[in-house]
Length: 167
Image (cartoon, rainbow, N blue to C red):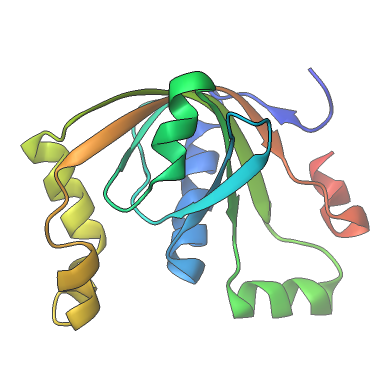
């Protein structure tokens, strides 16, 4: 285990907390995959849900390249960054982050399947504050297909001296 690694089992609650902060500040995560030609490709995903340790799923509605890439190269890396303005301003003033600012989860995409009622309800709770908007109806109202991700590695992001307390 390198100094950047965390443990999926023991650090899962902290990982989920950072993912929650990331979503609140940017409404998405970045999922990196590899194309058939070996080129990297990054997809913004706003519907990723972390479940029990090492498990997650996202609603696959608008993605085109990610499912194509999954056919030949199912490995992915998900980046979550706490982009909150006050979090960063406070950290810059103090000269250190009070909590980890970012984390990468490495995993493997599973098959596309129908979402369960519980999975749909969980996602709808996440976006309930936007239900009155036109964007909600266009993006998130009808989410029905999910793709599972099994995570096997987590890596914290090192940002120089401001993250030294975590290493």
